Length: 263
Image (cartoon, rainbow, N blue to C red; front, top):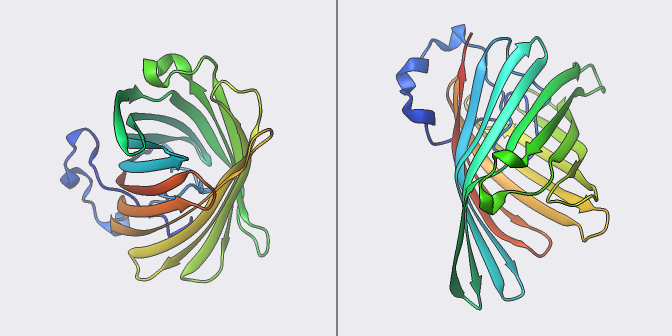
């Protein structure tokens, strides 16, 4: 969301913060696609790299089964190839554990998720009641994944991203789209809606609902909320907590950092 999405806590490849400590008046404010599930309609400036990375803990419970997942590295790298057009590449490293009746099994899955490869293009700017709009899409390439997380087929998703400025301190954003994955031919329709509020110039909060509606399975609905802080215009931190409305996700906790490397 414009002016309100600020990002996360682990530095990428041990880079020093001092490399990016430039005068804020020389660096345009960074707009990120984390920490929430809502993708912003903004692209990265031309010839700039933006690294958005972090970690998360997630627990799913169904009947007597519980699955815990730790994401040690959830990284998205965005590059401004042209004005209002960016390329995107992402790769997560995760570890999963399963418990039955509160007894942890010895099975542990770990490794890289399928490589995410995609693009985003800005369609129109905000004008009165007309929202800011962008279109983005990705391929999830299975041959780049570790054995424990490797599907047999390539996943695909797309979504339209919208944003409205409400006033100087608040705005809303929402996404509508669909995804195909997990070796299933059925589509899952995706929605998100987020409200953000700037408490201070560099400190913001947000609340969000989101979910997916598979064609032949039950729908999944979630909520999350978080806080964001901009250290500099090109360094942003965040923290998030969330849960599902429907049966499934018991808790989600995440934190991370986003850094933009100017051209």
